[in-house]
Image (cartoon, rainbow, N blue to C red; front, side, top):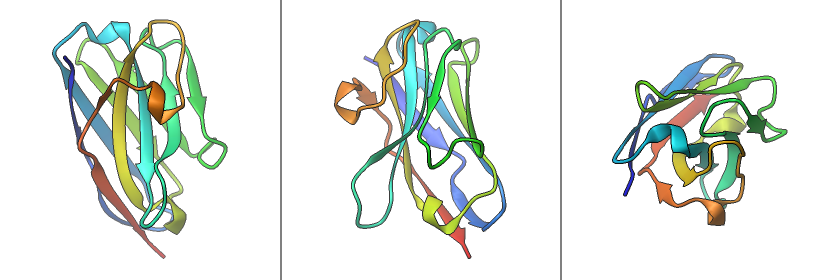
Amino acid sequence: QVQLVESGGGLVQAGGSLRLSCAASGRTFSNYAMDWFRQPPGKEREFVAAISGGGGTTYYADSVKGRFTISKDNAKNTVYLQMNSLKSEDTAVYYCAAKRGYSRTYYRPGDMEYWGEGTLVTVSS
């Protein structure tokens, strides 16, 4: 079992930055690929970014490429999402998720094994 707890959400103006964190506990963190998903108000959950268990492979949704960066600190059992140049359309509840996988990434919600409770990001225009 893996427990995931997100933090770092909040209210920010358009053009600003936030860094989300997701702390994991329960298993060997380096064996788990980590993703960030988000769910905007009234919409379905969507993929944002992914990183392999070893941290060597990343993958981004086109909507955030060049603005968001995912990183993983296996020593701290934490995955981060640095979000820059935020837009109003980035407003959503952000979730981290985990799946066993050292070398590859995943991007479909149905692939993921464990989920956090989410943290709200609100971008004001």
